[in-house]
Image (cartoon, rainbow, N blue to C red; front, side, top):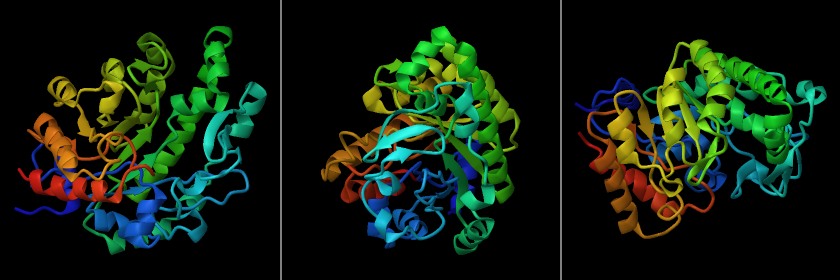
Length: 352
């Protein structure tokens, strides 16, 4: 029986097999929204066939205006590869320093900076409820989630700057704890608001690893991050999924202990093995992603795209609990041809 998108997603979250594997994306570069939605994100997501539409709590970057770009039209000047940050210089509301659109360091150096770089919630300004209602009315069969790359650990590290953060692990660990706790409380504020807006699950973006390694040891992660992950999970009534770049397999058991219910993006180029993760955690976690967005989605080789989608389906489809997505974001280097084929073919071979 053919399901609606929301039925499909909720069945998957409950670890049962839906009519087919749902299609998901954590983040989509503005060039795809321009190409497929003429600047309107919802039209682009519908064109892509996504089953889950994301509601994002937009960030404010100095004097650059925030945009609820996932529920309204993107201004023409931001419809470029890289989106709103492209070519931008400044310090954002969290204390991250940007140069020509690239992150270069952190401005939070001590306790005197904490209030400055723990921003006000401004919930309705970030995501106006009337726009969310309009979105629901236009696409009533879709599942909705909050995707926000403002998890407490990675945001603390970036706002302090990597060098200062790692020195502080030895010189002032309490400062790190204090910042992480305040960021966790901030995240709870936006997540509760998203829950009130009716989203079905939360995706907490919190980058904690790179290729082959985690940024800190599992012991340090257990001490510094996991209590706050648990605080976030316990504050909500809907599932919390965790997005992280890099090799996160050494930290998965800890995330499960904190109550995390899903995992995105499991980058294969970083060393994550989708089949191994499915075998070990498939009954505990909903898995999203793993299609290679470095070596596959950046090409126009559609046979290669289909081969990688087949690999993901073989490794994770059985028994439900899997959503097809890229192994990170749909970034500016991904090609429209490859992305379109990933979702088209995924819907075809994802049938149960």
